[in-house]
Amino acid sequence: MTKLLAWCGDRARWFLIGGLLIGGLVRPVAETLLPFVGTAIALLLFLACLRTGPKAAAGTRRDLRRTMLAVATLQIAVPLGVLIIGAAAAIPHAILSPLVLLLAASSVTVVPHFLAIMGMNTSHALRLLLVGTLLVPATAWVVFSAAGKFGILAYGDPGAILTAVLRLLAVVILAAGLAFALRLSALKNLGPSATAWTEGWAAILLAVVVIGLMAPMGAALTERPGELISTIALAFAVNFTLQLSAWWSSRLFSQDRAERTAFAAVNGNRNFALFLTALPLSTMEPMLLFIACYQVPNYLTPFVFRRLYAPKPRGSVPS
Image (cartoon, rainbow, N blue to C red):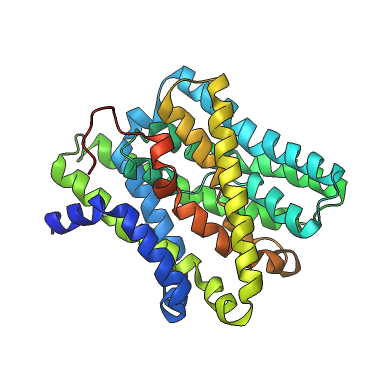
């Protein structure tokens, strides 16, 4: 079993690509796995915390201060900047609404796994995920309030939004708490076998998540192919622009490649699907296809950006 899981972990990038293809082309499989996506995401967070450990995840006081600043930048400054510029440029609400919603969210739970697939340190990404999720109730409230004043979005009942965010917060605390408790007791040191176990299961769960989230694309492929193509193109443009702009601008405050990668990957890959349970159907229905299409560039991140984020050392032999 360990050898099989190690084999899966070594091929995690191909599990992502396979998941995208199956989710987009085999509609019954995607619709079958969709109800299990929430559970799979929680398990992925558990595995990321277990792999990193509480000491590396907590970091130093300086690390925490830098993480707080990064979260404020990502979840308040960036969406407010886009909101102001978009409103001034009269960008259509159909484009500006999902973009602001995307940027108001914290990191997707799989970003630490993206860095692990690229062979990089995951502690910076995990801190951004945990701290960003803890602060979502406050940061999202600021962004939604500003959006309402601009007349851009009608997000519905603020209490419902807060309930959804707190539900996510409870999942994060439970998953991280269990993982860190194990690392402080039974699994103080992860050996090769335990590491292979976590990486193998992470690859399998990543495939489950991406297949399930692609379900809306299956219907669009047969019913609205033109709209599907244009929406995928928009998703790629938004995701890659966000990641590249954050990667190059991060040179102003950090020379740590793992820290810069975490900042860039989080900027492009946000958990805006969490708002699906709280926002009115009239607000969310036009965004469902965009949310599904956004999974394509999202889960291609470790494949497309590997050379930029984690280049091979000079003189290394290509694998």
